[in-house]
Amino acid sequence: MGIREDVVEMARNARAASRKLASLDRGTKDRALNGIADALLAQSDLVRAENGRDVAAAKEAGLSAAMVDRLTLTPARIQAMAAGVREVVALPDPVGEVTSMWLRPNGLRIGRMRIPLGVIGVIYESRPNVTIDAAALCLKSGNAAILRGGSEAVHSNRVLGRIMTEQMVAAGIPAAAIQVMPTTDRAAVDALLEQEESIDVIIPRGGEELIRKVVAKSRIPVLKHYKGVCHVFVDADANPKKARNIVMNAKAQRPGVCNAMETLLIHGGIAEDFLALIVPALTQAGVELRGCPMTRHFVPGMKAATDEDWTTEYNDMVLAIRVVDDIDMAIDHIQKYGSDHTDAIVTENYSNAQKFIREVNSSSVMVNASTRFSDGFQYGLGAEIGISTTRLHAYGPMGLVELTTTKYVVYGEGQVRES
Image 1: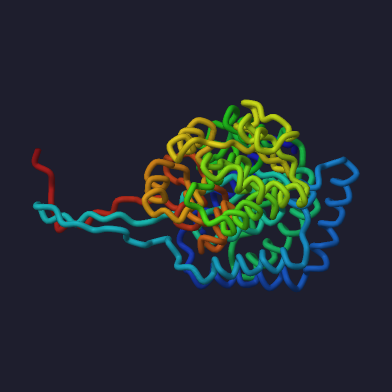
Image 2: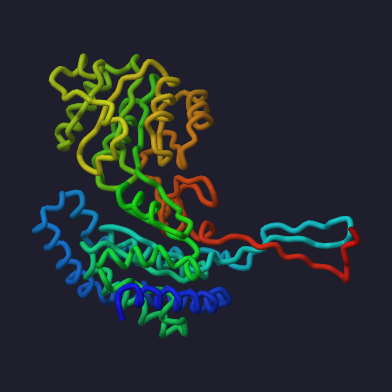
């Protein structure tokens, strides 16, 4: 068969598997998930060997250090993947939960019950841990999934797919419940986005270019975030030491991820002192700095920031800095240039913290915490299948509950409608 025919068959098989998944008991799903976690640790050497092939190819192809870091599976990251699966196991099963029930004057009892979305297509780049996170969340929430990782992680994803299939089959779950697309041909993605009769939602994870291509071509609803232009605003009433630690963590800990800070905003009243504190630390960490005119007044020689810098997700050791007059100017900047992902304020002023929470409507708003915490695992969701910056259905990190919808359930005693 050709690529399109292969994808059509995968989608149809996923649809058939989703019907069985929707009615599976929690024990069966949890047995499969525990088996996956155990197998990840038991076969860690095999996973690392296959991942090593991908990392070597990425370095040879000249991928940035940040992108290679996203691709690499260290022993600690494999352990974290297994721990994430076990957190999903420990979470309540949302399927079948009755979220509300009310009585009508005619005696009808009307309620809402959680059900799976159905079949989910996940298209992503670089990070092979997404393969496990997405599979675990889909399986627990009763959804079948077709996973299409980037070509740079093909060997990693294939071995992870084999591990998951073995454990699902051992637990009595159809192999088609979680399928890793075997081909790296881009035609397969185009074919996947046409399967609206079999697939219910598409979730792309990756750079803005990938996500916009998916949105433009998909016949299926897409849950998305285009980019993570995350801000930290250091208020006039910030604790300098606390602010320094948050800024360094938000920018330099893992610059290649979507919840890393890309723009630092500093209140003008403390700008000179705070820049004197933070610039040497950022420079020593290897961060390239680009500043507004006022920033460059305090730090001569810093590269000038352009309007493009305020909207750029660098995914690298680059940071734009702007000095603002007050909290209102900081909020205006975020509303104009932000991406509705994650934004933080560092302040000891309760009123300013509450104003920031009320007026910044990003999917995650932080007070005195690093933007790096915007993550399903950190939020206690077990893992995340993505971060949505679209406000219909889900907003922010998406865990189990966000992979379900609700149906109405109506109980009667023979009532008939008269008008």
